[in-house]
Amino acid sequence: MARFGWGKILAGVAATAAAGAAYIYFKQRAARPPVHETLLSEGGFEIRRYPALLVLETIQHGSRDRALGNGFGLLADYMFGEARKGEEIPITMPVLTAPLADAAWRVRFLLPESQDRAALEMPGPGISLAEIPAREVAVISVPGKPTDRGFAARTAELEQWITGQGRTAAGTAELAYYTSPLKPEAGRANEVLIPLHS
Image 1 (cartoon, rainbow, N blue to C red):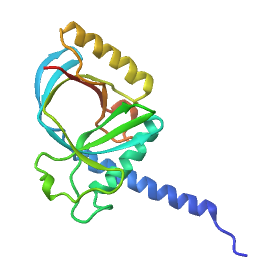
Image 2: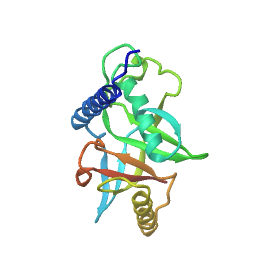
Image 3: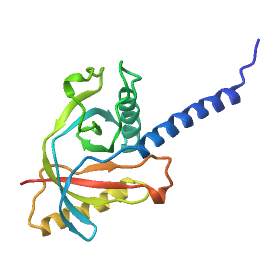
């Protein structure tokens, strides 16, 4: 009976995964954030106005990290043309996540402003196209490795600042990821966004 070289097989799988992650990293380096207007900047806080944004989204269950990883892979397959016909769609950062009920997370990829929705192939099961309406959001950065504790602490700071500005939240906090997990922790850029009532 032939013996399988599990070490070589696992090494091959790891190399393939690393190559895929590196590919996404270089794609993200070229990604651009959506155009927005900064209405207020105070210390580490901002209020921004974004136009309506077309997004590709999926709902995933489990921990934040698991949901983000599974959702990212599923949406990336569509963006890079693995799960549909046609050319790649450029990545627009950040990737957005938001907690939902029943231990679920909504993961969103922003589509380029120039993207024609009518020209897109309908996504498969588990993915949908949606539009975030034009809105104002309050923002605070979360540098370094994104952790549940770090996001929670910065969200609390942002909520307190919003109250001090005499504004009210129009929804739950969203977590925004601007850089690849391959980037060193100190260089990662993340944010908490909270939509505001006009």
